[in-house]
Image (cartoon, rainbow, N blue to C red; front, side, top):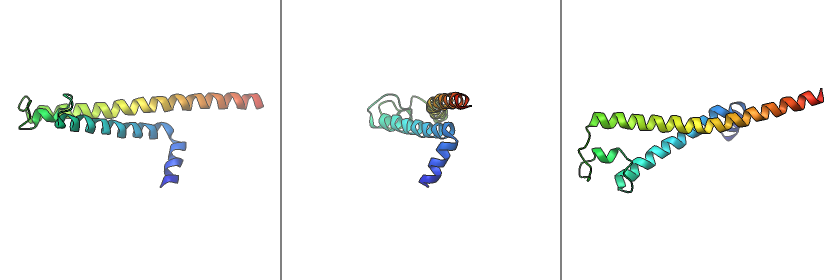
Length: 106
């Protein structure tokens, strides 16, 4: 499994880092929502739906689901693009340097 993952990283580094970024974005959404339910921050959407919470009843279920969808999609896409952007720059620099080195040899 590890060899296959490393081979995939070597052949498709931007895609792999995009997927890693999406996993980090999903972790971020989970941390925000769990922290919101625990009362540590006010950024979560789930506390707005939870009965018995101090902010309960401010939005209905449909609004909450739509906000959760936007939050999750934004975090997944944002983290994925940020991670993949760094990998794309690294791949571009590596290719330019490899091309310059091959032109010097020829």
